[in-house]
Amino acid sequence: MSKVLISSNAPWAPTGYGTQARLIGRSLRELGHEVAYLAYWGLTAGIIEWDGFRVYPQGYLEWGHDIIDSHARHFQADIMLTLQDVWVLPDDVGLRGFPWVAIVPVDMAPVSPAVQRPLRTSCSQVVAMSRWGQEEFKRVGIDADYLPHGVDTTELYPDETPKGTLKERLGFPADAFLVGMVAANKGWPSRKSFEECFDAFQTFERDHPNAYLYLHSVAGSQMRGPNLNEMASAYGISNKLRFAAPYVMLVGGSPDEMRMTYSAFDVLLAPSLGEGFGIPVLEAQACGVPVIVNDFSAQPELCGAGWIVKPSRKRWMPINAFQMEPSIAGIIEALRAAYNSGDTLRDQAREFALRYDQKRLQ
Image (cartoon, rainbow, N blue to C red; front, side, top):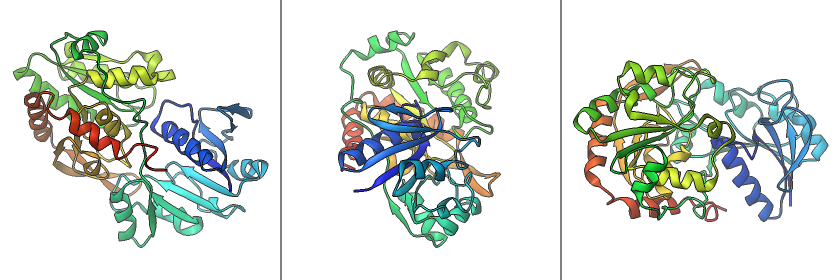
Protein backbone atom coordinates (compact mmCIF):
# COMPACT_ATOMS: atom_id res chain seq x y z
CA MET A 1 0.00 0.00 0.00
CA SER A 2 1.08 3.59 -0.65
CA LYS A 3 1.43 6.81 1.26
CA VAL A 4 -0.48 9.49 -0.64
CA LEU A 5 -0.29 13.26 -0.15
CA ILE A 6 -3.42 14.96 -1.53
CA SER A 7 -3.08 18.63 -2.44
CA SER A 8 -6.47 20.36 -2.52
CA ASN A 9 -8.82 22.44 -0.40
CA ALA A 10 -8.91 21.37 3.23
CA PRO A 11 -11.08 18.24 3.58
CA TRP A 12 -13.42 20.10 5.93
CA ALA A 13 -13.87 23.02 3.54
CA PRO A 14 -17.45 23.72 2.34
CA THR A 15 -16.34 23.72 -1.31
CA GLY A 16 -16.49 21.30 -4.21
CA TYR A 17 -12.79 20.52 -3.93
CA GLY A 18 -13.03 20.17 -0.16
CA THR A 19 -15.96 17.76 -0.42
CA GLN A 20 -14.22 15.60 -3.02
CA ALA A 21 -10.86 15.69 -1.24
CA ARG A 22 -12.61 14.35 1.86
CA LEU A 23 -14.37 11.56 -0.06
CA ILE A 24 -11.22 10.57 -1.99
CA GLY A 25 -9.08 10.52 1.15
CA ARG A 26 -11.54 8.37 3.05
CA SER A 27 -11.92 6.00 0.12
CA LEU A 28 -8.14 5.60 -0.23
CA ARG A 29 -7.86 4.97 3.51
CA GLU A 30 -10.55 2.30 3.35
CA LEU A 31 -8.52 0.63 0.60
CA GLY A 32 -5.55 0.45 2.94
CA HIS A 33 -3.51 3.49 1.87
CA GLU A 34 -2.11 6.05 4.28
CA VAL A 35 -3.29 9.54 3.35
CA ALA A 36 -2.32 13.08 4.31
CA TYR A 37 -3.47 16.44 2.93
CA LEU A 38 -1.82 19.64 1.81
CA ALA A 39 -4.61 22.16 2.41
CA TYR A 40 -3.60 24.97 0.05
CA TRP A 41 -6.92 26.59 1.00
CA GLY A 42 -8.28 26.28 4.52
CA LEU A 43 -5.13 26.01 6.65
CA THR A 44 -2.37 28.61 6.77
CA ALA A 45 -0.14 27.57 9.68
CA GLY A 46 0.78 24.45 11.61
CA ILE A 47 0.30 20.72 11.04
CA ILE A 48 -2.91 19.34 12.54
CA GLU A 49 -4.75 16.04 12.80
CA TRP A 50 -8.30 15.87 11.44
CA ASP A 51 -10.50 12.77 11.26
CA GLY A 52 -7.39 10.61 11.60
CA PHE A 53 -5.59 12.42 8.75
CA ARG A 54 -2.50 14.59 8.98
CA VAL A 55 -3.19 17.96 7.35
CA TYR A 56 -0.33 20.21 6.23
CA PRO A 57 -0.73 23.97 5.74
CA GLN A 58 -0.44 26.16 2.68
CA GLY A 59 3.00 27.61 2.05
CA TYR A 60 3.79 31.22 1.23
CA LEU A 61 2.34 30.91 -2.27
CA GLU A 62 -1.40 30.69 -2.86
CA TRP A 63 -1.54 27.19 -4.30
CA GLY A 64 0.98 25.50 -2.02
CA HIS A 65 3.38 24.55 -4.79
CA ASP A 66 6.31 26.18 -3.02
CA ILE A 67 6.02 23.63 -0.23
CA ILE A 68 4.38 20.54 -1.72
CA ASP A 69 7.65 18.63 -2.12
CA SER A 70 8.77 19.53 1.42
CA HIS A 71 5.47 18.27 2.84
CA ALA A 72 5.78 15.12 0.72
CA ARG A 73 9.25 14.44 2.14
CA HIS A 74 8.07 15.09 5.69
CA PHE A 75 5.18 12.63 5.19
CA GLN A 76 7.51 10.23 3.30
CA ALA A 77 4.91 10.09 0.56
CA ASP A 78 5.05 7.66 -2.33
CA ILE A 79 2.69 9.73 -4.50
CA MET A 80 1.62 13.37 -4.79
CA LEU A 81 -2.02 13.64 -5.88
CA THR A 82 -3.43 17.03 -6.84
CA LEU A 83 -7.13 17.81 -7.01
CA GLN A 84 -7.09 21.34 -8.39
CA ASP A 85 -6.56 23.44 -11.48
CA VAL A 86 -3.09 22.71 -12.81
CA TRP A 87 -2.53 25.88 -14.82
CA VAL A 88 -1.66 27.61 -11.53
CA LEU A 89 1.19 25.14 -10.88
CA PRO A 90 4.81 25.39 -12.11
CA ASP A 91 5.80 23.13 -14.96
CA ASP A 92 8.27 21.18 -12.80
CA VAL A 93 5.93 20.33 -9.92
CA GLY A 94 6.11 16.64 -10.85
CA LEU A 95 9.90 16.62 -11.06
CA ARG A 96 10.61 17.15 -7.37
CA GLY A 97 11.24 13.55 -6.38
CA PHE A 98 7.70 12.20 -6.20
CA PRO A 99 5.38 10.81 -8.90
CA TRP A 100 2.60 13.28 -9.60
CA VAL A 101 -0.98 12.13 -10.25
CA ALA A 102 -3.24 15.01 -11.33
CA ILE A 103 -7.04 14.84 -11.16
CA VAL A 104 -7.80 17.68 -13.55
CA PRO A 105 -10.94 19.71 -14.25
CA VAL A 106 -11.47 20.64 -17.90
CA ASP A 107 -14.07 23.39 -18.30
CA MET A 108 -12.88 25.03 -21.51
CA ALA A 109 -12.24 23.95 -25.09
CA PRO A 110 -9.76 23.28 -26.39
CA VAL A 111 -7.68 22.28 -23.36
CA SER A 112 -5.75 25.45 -22.58
CA PRO A 113 -2.00 25.47 -23.33
CA ALA A 114 -1.56 26.58 -19.70
CA VAL A 115 -3.21 23.32 -18.59
CA GLN A 116 -1.34 21.16 -21.06
CA ARG A 117 2.14 22.48 -20.24
CA PRO A 118 2.70 21.13 -16.69
CA LEU A 119 0.95 17.87 -17.56
CA ARG A 120 3.23 17.24 -20.54
CA THR A 121 6.34 18.35 -18.63
CA SER A 122 6.15 16.49 -15.35
CA CYS A 123 2.90 14.60 -14.68
CA SER A 124 3.05 10.83 -14.19
CA GLN A 125 -0.68 10.20 -14.61
CA VAL A 126 -3.50 12.47 -15.79
CA VAL A 127 -7.02 11.76 -14.56
CA ALA A 128 -10.07 13.48 -16.04
CA MET A 129 -13.12 13.92 -13.85
CA SER A 130 -15.57 13.85 -16.78
CA ARG A 131 -15.90 11.89 -20.02
CA TRP A 132 -15.98 15.21 -21.85
CA GLY A 133 -12.69 16.21 -20.26
CA GLN A 134 -11.17 12.86 -21.17
CA GLU A 135 -12.15 13.39 -24.81
CA GLU A 136 -10.77 16.94 -24.83
CA PHE A 137 -7.44 15.62 -23.53
CA LYS A 138 -7.48 13.01 -26.28
CA ARG A 139 -7.97 15.76 -28.90
CA VAL A 140 -4.67 17.35 -27.86
CA GLY A 141 -2.79 14.08 -27.56
CA ILE A 142 -2.86 13.60 -23.78
CA ASP A 143 -3.83 10.16 -22.49
CA ALA A 144 -6.09 10.56 -19.46
CA ASP A 145 -7.84 8.08 -17.22
CA TYR A 146 -11.36 8.77 -15.99
CA LEU A 147 -12.52 9.10 -12.39
CA PRO A 148 -15.73 11.05 -11.81
CA HIS A 149 -16.53 12.86 -8.61
CA GLY A 150 -19.01 11.23 -6.27
CA VAL A 151 -21.73 12.14 -3.79
CA ASP A 152 -22.69 10.58 -0.50
CA THR A 153 -26.25 9.51 -1.21
CA THR A 154 -26.70 8.33 2.37
CA GLU A 155 -26.49 11.99 3.42
CA LEU A 156 -28.19 13.56 0.41
CA TYR A 157 -31.60 12.10 -0.44
CA PRO A 158 -35.17 13.37 -0.88
CA ASP A 159 -36.27 14.81 2.45
CA GLU A 160 -39.71 13.53 3.44
CA THR A 161 -40.69 16.77 5.16
CA PRO A 162 -43.54 18.38 3.17
CA LYS A 163 -42.03 20.55 0.45
CA GLY A 164 -44.11 23.53 1.49
CA THR A 165 -42.68 23.33 5.01
CA LEU A 166 -39.14 23.22 3.65
CA LYS A 167 -39.83 26.31 1.53
CA GLU A 168 -41.22 28.19 4.52
CA ARG A 169 -38.03 27.37 6.48
CA LEU A 170 -36.09 29.19 3.76
CA GLY A 171 -38.41 32.19 4.01
CA PHE A 172 -40.70 31.54 1.02
CA PRO A 173 -44.44 30.88 0.72
CA ALA A 174 -45.36 27.22 0.96
CA ASP A 175 -46.90 27.33 -2.53
CA ALA A 176 -43.88 29.01 -4.16
CA PHE A 177 -42.25 27.60 -7.27
CA LEU A 178 -38.71 27.67 -5.93
CA VAL A 179 -35.74 27.93 -8.26
CA GLY A 180 -32.44 27.22 -6.50
CA MET A 181 -28.86 28.06 -7.34
CA VAL A 182 -25.91 26.54 -5.46
CA ALA A 183 -22.97 28.36 -7.00
CA ALA A 184 -19.74 29.98 -5.86
CA ASN A 185 -19.78 33.72 -6.54
CA LYS A 186 -16.09 33.92 -7.37
CA GLY A 187 -14.40 35.97 -10.06
CA TRP A 188 -15.64 38.06 -12.96
CA PRO A 189 -16.96 37.38 -15.53
CA SER A 190 -19.05 34.93 -13.56
CA ARG A 191 -18.51 31.32 -14.60
CA LYS A 192 -21.80 30.46 -12.90
CA SER A 193 -23.86 32.61 -15.31
CA PHE A 194 -25.54 34.72 -12.64
CA GLU A 195 -26.29 37.50 -15.11
CA GLU A 196 -27.90 35.17 -17.67
CA CYS A 197 -29.89 33.44 -14.91
CA PHE A 198 -31.15 36.72 -13.42
CA ASP A 199 -32.12 37.98 -16.85
CA ALA A 200 -34.04 34.79 -17.61
CA PHE A 201 -35.71 34.67 -14.19
CA GLN A 202 -36.88 38.27 -14.62
CA THR A 203 -38.83 37.30 -17.74
CA PHE A 204 -40.03 33.97 -16.34
CA GLU A 205 -41.33 35.51 -13.11
CA ARG A 206 -43.56 37.99 -14.96
CA ASP A 207 -45.76 35.11 -16.14
CA HIS A 208 -45.31 33.01 -13.00
CA PRO A 209 -45.79 35.36 -10.02
CA ASN A 210 -45.39 32.54 -7.50
CA ALA A 211 -41.79 31.97 -8.68
CA TYR A 212 -38.93 32.75 -6.29
CA LEU A 213 -35.16 32.37 -6.42
CA TYR A 214 -32.89 31.08 -3.64
CA LEU A 215 -29.12 31.43 -3.88
CA HIS A 216 -26.71 29.37 -1.83
CA SER A 217 -24.05 31.90 -2.76
CA VAL A 218 -22.13 34.81 -1.27
CA ALA A 219 -24.15 37.91 -2.10
CA GLY A 220 -21.28 40.39 -2.06
CA SER A 221 -18.00 40.74 -3.88
CA GLN A 222 -15.73 39.31 -1.16
CA MET A 223 -14.36 36.71 -3.59
CA ARG A 224 -14.02 39.14 -6.49
CA GLY A 225 -17.38 38.16 -7.90
CA PRO A 226 -20.20 40.57 -8.74
CA ASN A 227 -22.39 42.15 -6.07
CA LEU A 228 -25.45 39.96 -6.56
CA ASN A 229 -27.72 42.21 -4.53
CA GLU A 230 -26.94 45.08 -6.89
CA MET A 231 -27.37 42.80 -9.91
CA ALA A 232 -30.75 41.59 -8.61
CA SER A 233 -31.86 45.18 -8.11
CA ALA A 234 -30.82 46.09 -11.65
CA TYR A 235 -32.90 43.21 -13.01
CA GLY A 236 -35.87 44.08 -10.77
CA ILE A 237 -36.01 40.76 -8.92
CA SER A 238 -34.82 41.77 -5.43
CA ASN A 239 -38.24 41.09 -3.91
CA LYS A 240 -38.20 37.54 -5.29
CA LEU A 241 -34.77 36.52 -4.10
CA ARG A 242 -33.18 35.30 -0.88
CA PHE A 243 -29.61 34.30 -0.05
CA ALA A 244 -28.21 31.71 2.32
CA ALA A 245 -27.05 33.17 5.62
CA PRO A 246 -23.54 34.63 5.29
CA TYR A 247 -22.35 32.56 8.26
CA VAL A 248 -23.52 29.35 6.57
CA MET A 249 -21.63 30.34 3.43
CA LEU A 250 -18.47 30.82 5.49
CA VAL A 251 -18.52 27.66 7.62
CA GLY A 252 -20.70 25.43 5.41
CA GLY A 253 -24.08 23.84 5.93
CA SER A 254 -24.42 20.47 7.60
CA PRO A 255 -25.50 17.47 5.47
CA ASP A 256 -28.97 17.73 7.03
CA GLU A 257 -29.21 21.43 6.20
CA MET A 258 -28.09 20.88 2.61
CA ARG A 259 -30.49 17.95 2.16
CA MET A 260 -33.41 20.06 3.34
CA THR A 261 -32.29 23.03 1.22
CA TYR A 262 -32.00 21.01 -1.98
CA SER A 263 -35.28 19.21 -1.25
CA ALA A 264 -37.08 22.56 -1.01
CA PHE A 265 -36.17 23.37 -4.63
CA ASP A 266 -38.48 22.64 -7.53
CA VAL A 267 -35.51 22.89 -9.90
CA LEU A 268 -31.79 23.62 -9.63
CA LEU A 269 -30.67 26.34 -12.05
CA ALA A 270 -27.03 25.64 -12.97
CA PRO A 271 -26.22 26.54 -16.61
CA SER A 272 -22.56 27.43 -16.10
CA LEU A 273 -20.25 28.79 -18.77
CA GLY A 274 -18.13 25.71 -18.11
CA GLU A 275 -17.79 23.00 -15.48
CA GLY A 276 -14.96 20.60 -14.80
CA PHE A 277 -17.65 18.50 -13.13
CA GLY A 278 -20.48 20.31 -11.32
CA ILE A 279 -21.14 18.68 -7.95
CA PRO A 280 -24.34 20.61 -7.05
CA VAL A 281 -25.99 19.16 -10.17
CA LEU A 282 -25.53 15.65 -8.76
CA GLU A 283 -26.33 16.70 -5.19
CA ALA A 284 -29.67 18.18 -6.27
CA GLN A 285 -30.60 15.07 -8.23
CA ALA A 286 -29.63 12.91 -5.24
CA CYS A 287 -32.34 14.84 -3.38
CA GLY A 288 -34.85 14.18 -6.17
CA VAL A 289 -34.60 17.63 -7.78
CA PRO A 290 -34.33 18.06 -11.58
CA VAL A 291 -31.70 20.40 -12.99
CA ILE A 292 -31.11 22.95 -15.76
CA VAL A 293 -27.62 22.90 -17.26
CA ASN A 294 -25.73 24.32 -20.22
CA ASP A 295 -24.92 22.11 -23.21
CA PHE A 296 -21.18 22.44 -22.73
CA SER A 297 -18.31 20.77 -20.86
CA ALA A 298 -19.20 18.11 -18.28
CA GLN A 299 -22.72 19.40 -17.75
CA PRO A 300 -24.80 17.33 -20.20
CA GLU A 301 -23.40 14.00 -18.97
CA LEU A 302 -24.54 14.85 -15.43
CA CYS A 303 -28.11 15.74 -16.38
CA GLY A 304 -30.13 12.59 -15.80
CA ALA A 305 -33.37 14.41 -15.03
CA GLY A 306 -33.90 17.91 -16.31
CA TRP A 307 -33.19 20.22 -19.22
CA ILE A 308 -30.09 21.04 -21.27
CA VAL A 309 -29.90 24.61 -22.59
CA LYS A 310 -28.18 25.30 -25.90
CA PRO A 311 -25.35 27.87 -25.73
CA SER A 312 -25.77 31.25 -27.40
CA ARG A 313 -22.13 32.19 -28.04
CA LYS A 314 -18.59 31.28 -27.06
CA ARG A 315 -16.50 33.45 -24.77
CA TRP A 316 -12.71 33.65 -24.84
CA MET A 317 -11.04 33.24 -21.45
CA PRO A 318 -7.68 34.66 -20.35
CA ILE A 319 -5.90 31.28 -20.32
CA ASN A 320 -6.53 31.09 -24.07
CA ALA A 321 -9.49 28.75 -24.40
CA PHE A 322 -13.25 29.12 -24.75
CA GLN A 323 -16.31 28.67 -22.59
CA MET A 324 -19.93 28.96 -23.73
CA GLU A 325 -22.66 31.34 -22.60
CA PRO A 326 -26.06 29.70 -22.07
CA SER A 327 -28.97 31.04 -24.08
CA ILE A 328 -31.22 33.29 -21.99
CA ALA A 329 -34.19 32.26 -24.12
CA GLY A 330 -33.24 28.64 -23.52
CA ILE A 331 -33.12 29.15 -19.75
CA ILE A 332 -36.59 30.71 -19.86
CA GLU A 333 -37.99 27.75 -21.78
CA ALA A 334 -36.35 25.31 -19.38
CA LEU A 335 -37.84 27.13 -16.39
CA ARG A 336 -41.27 26.92 -18.01
CA ALA A 337 -40.82 23.22 -18.62
CA ALA A 338 -39.75 22.71 -15.02
CA TYR A 339 -42.78 24.65 -13.80
CA ASN A 340 -45.11 22.40 -15.78
CA SER A 341 -43.37 19.16 -14.83
CA GLY A 342 -44.40 19.20 -11.18
CA ASP A 343 -42.77 16.43 -9.16
CA THR A 344 -42.67 13.90 -12.01
CA LEU A 345 -38.87 13.70 -12.27
CA ARG A 346 -38.09 13.07 -8.59
CA ASP A 347 -37.48 9.31 -8.87
CA GLN A 348 -35.60 9.64 -12.15
CA ALA A 349 -33.30 12.25 -10.62
CA ARG A 350 -32.56 10.10 -7.60
CA GLU A 351 -31.88 6.98 -9.64
CA PHE A 352 -29.45 8.84 -11.87
CA ALA A 353 -27.51 10.30 -8.92
CA LEU A 354 -27.11 6.83 -7.42
CA ARG A 355 -24.78 5.98 -10.32
CA TYR A 356 -22.31 8.45 -8.81
CA ASP A 357 -22.60 7.28 -5.22
CA GLN A 358 -19.16 7.47 -3.66
CA LYS A 359 -19.22 3.81 -2.58
CA ARG A 360 -19.93 2.63 -6.13
CA LEU A 361 -16.95 4.59 -7.43
CA GLN A 362 -14.38 3.01 -5.12
